Image (cartoon, rainbow, N blue to C red; front, side):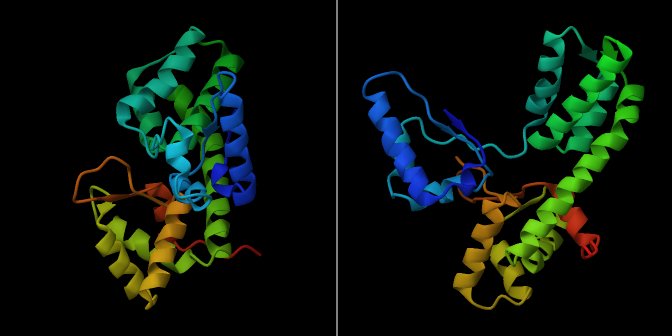
Length: 238
């Protein structure tokens, strides 16, 4: 069973689902997969302190992909259908996607439609340029949705402050103490409120703390281009 958007799962429903899956697994092979934003572990863990350990296989943290993985996510599915993508085209797509999985999906869909319309068996830089406007429009819609989500949860000011911190960093990483200081400078004076705010940004995937790190622990921008969008001064929807 695959459950997407699991970071929005009601706690009582999640607890019931976990218990039911364990009963099924006692009698037959069964796999329960929960997928959501990088902040997903913090949400179901509120159901029970042992939630993740009871799932059996544990947690796979997925944020922005490594470049090789992003390339493979495009090359492999196209290749199974006899469609290749040349090096320049692949590089342009990976750069525009910022290796964010959803943006790679948007590009894959757009490039497949290009192939279906033209019948070309190799995707070139010209095909990428032709597909770019539709992808850019979808990405812009995504930014607007994330902005409204941040604003609705009272996180707009914090998101801008964090974006300013990451903007000054070529490696786009920060220590938690630095994030805390940025939130304090943005006017969030209470330490507990700052911690809750960072949890909220993490839950929405705006920032991400990749698992399996050794100290010092570094946080990353979930989607760097979304932070750029926040800093450009998005207009309030009418």
